Length: 241
Image (cartoon, rainbow, N blue to C red; front, side):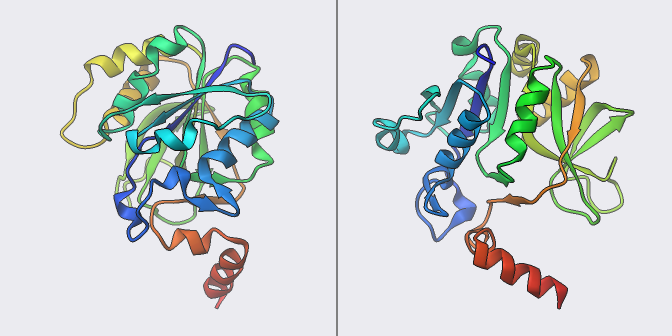
């Protein structure tokens, strides 16, 4: 996997994370910042290159950061104007190499990273989806057989195209095609990346990888409690009661 770039999108300002005042990607979680969890897990799974898209306030944090076995550098997104803009900023660095697009906010089981690596070796673009038994306010995968043919963002209860939520672990084997779509994609909402990805899926053969482990999106401050061992136990107990 020496030609694959892991692209971690970590430039968001985390306004919904108030009253915590620092970017979620460098927030100490289970003893280390979220970004460090991501980088170490990808390195352990055999990935060797990574690019982290960051905001200017976090430059100092990354200056002396090193991960054994992982060559990584940072790209600054001066203004947090969305995932689409963030991804376009890495284009000149990756060239035509395959990319693995990751949202730093998503916490999943560390054991799944090996499966991600195994599927990357097949050189087939794929997205990761998680089946849900109730509506959640995220994007959903529109599927046909084992293919993903579209993304529907926050469709509303009863309008879900499937029971599979989109997790931002996206392997794109030929990213130049996605970059070209992103260049011309516009939207009045913060969904340029999702719209471009939806258009890409209609043109390309992209499969999905089903993930059935734990998933803890870090969007709000109370997720810091829920996503700790004690918090997870308390949350599970509360749901059972």
